[in-house]
Image 1 (tube, rainbow, N blue to C red):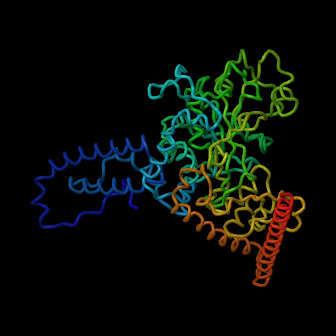
Image 2: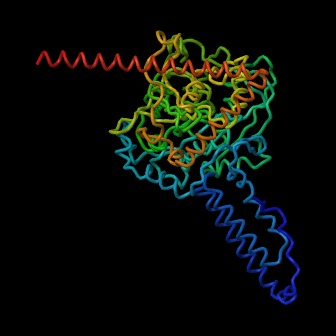
Image 3: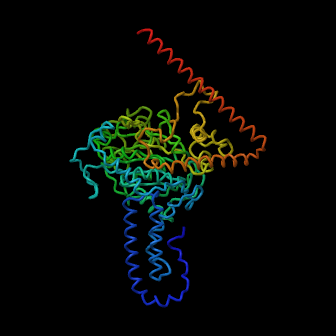
Length: 561
């Protein structure tokens, strides 16, 4: 797709050109006015309602219009100020393997803006009292007021500030999360490091050289977006300790963006989000965890946690209630470092980045805290500290989930292997072992994509929880809530099929690394088929036993009657 900044092709010399030359000055004036109107319109759309999934049509039509206008005006190329359109073009291009300065685009929805806006508006139009009741709350009193509210915000809506670390995530993952939260968040802070948790160097992709901040503003529907760079060359700061220190940049960003004590700090990973419905609950419902006067930042009461539905690599690989997640997390601003009052809520004594025992740590709770002077939360505490309350949805024909986790939504399994090799708890053989052996989550995804049984391996059947981990039937068979982005079936199909292809390609690369011959490959394939056959037999036998038990109980009940 040609760039707006490329020179248009030279016009063919024709005999009519001299005849029309006398009209060019007037045409240029008209053209420039039209360009101004076009740019204003496009800017408004980006500010008010854009998601990357619908940029393609807008940008294509805008570029066509610009080209036609410029051609009529006799200019060689659009004026410099039309560069404002260019930063958004890259996230509208779909390609599995393409990237934008190292940032994978992934697979993006082709749906128009109106498709997602209608779904967002449907959530937003739910009666406030009904919405609050579904989560066990009542509406905020209308006299609720916060001095930090802007004129665009009603006085009885809380402001939400989101913060996350960011590394190798794709625009696809961001688009999914941003579609859920579009127009809801007051501020967004991302923090990128030049080192992995294990101190390996990584390229910095999210600096502003490619106007990434502007793109993120467009995606999330807010002008208050920061991408902060974290550099710490202490090679002894490793693992989760490094991650926690990196997170401390989040509360600094929130302060700079104007967060106040009655606002809400929302910490998650890039691939996690509360449902749009619950985000609206946070804004408009009376939630005790967000009342500092009720708990004074007591760690048992001050935090809320998502009860989160897991989607493993594909939208169609849905975890059951037995495979739920417990992030993201929220804390009221009055309990956040950089925002709260140190006179009433001091800094926590720490061992490394963790709270010391007895100061809201997992061990010994709050036994060392006196006079209700509970410590303030760092962004790392919001993420990892013990305590708090899960948020459950309670409504007929709905599941109880309040959030979503798009786990391992990598578009390149080489990146997935690298993640397991270098992040958190590294797997030394991550680059050469079969993909499904990386961990249980990846095995879950492989079996889902290959349409294999969810039954456990032979040596795990006595130990493993036998509750089903996967929801059969994918999105079409699942009860809500579901991510708004996943309502696009075309996107789901393309994503799921692309993963099938990538699994095959990854397996080919792995075998090439190991220099496996044809016979070795046949042996491996036959072994996998045999294991699946054994799992199927076990699953059928287990199902038969359940039916027999059910029949026996029914006969006993009939005899009693």
